[in-house]
Length: 237
Image (cartoon, rainbow, N blue to C red; front, top):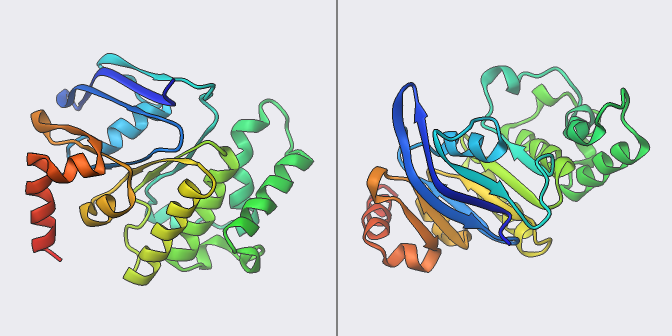
């Protein structure tokens, strides 16, 4: 059974339909990139998968034992969030909030999980640093470690490389690929970067009004919508 299944899902934003009758599924170990132009409903869909927004029609279900609180999420950052006055350790540890339940304090397991993920992403040297003093790439690694504290099964990443320079962007893509291929963590990533999406992802969901596409990366490259948008992306490189 699939981790995430969307059946005839429709979403509206400010009384305007942005997604209509969408069907797709994400299996354990998949790496799905959600692409499309601004206003196509990418971030709205992510909110639906997270349970933060209900579809106007259809349903989104979890399967294969995946619980609602077992989804790690790396959202787009606002300027205020980038200036958050907390240590790296505190930010990463906060990823355990959903697992804490009604307990008022973090457990020994919570704290060890935070340390393990800090080591996992090679940011031990930043442990006591203030989050707001870090570079953009360092902050994204911290947020990825935080997301991993919430789940060992699936990560939802909303534009994780926005604003990063090319070298740091490539490093982040390699890191996400490693989590997917070596640790079998399922990835759902929103991206404007079609070129990198077809390079790393196993599946593509292209939201484009009535021309929505879902399938493997190879199928996408051969599809009419993929050929058009991939060629347009090449022109802009």
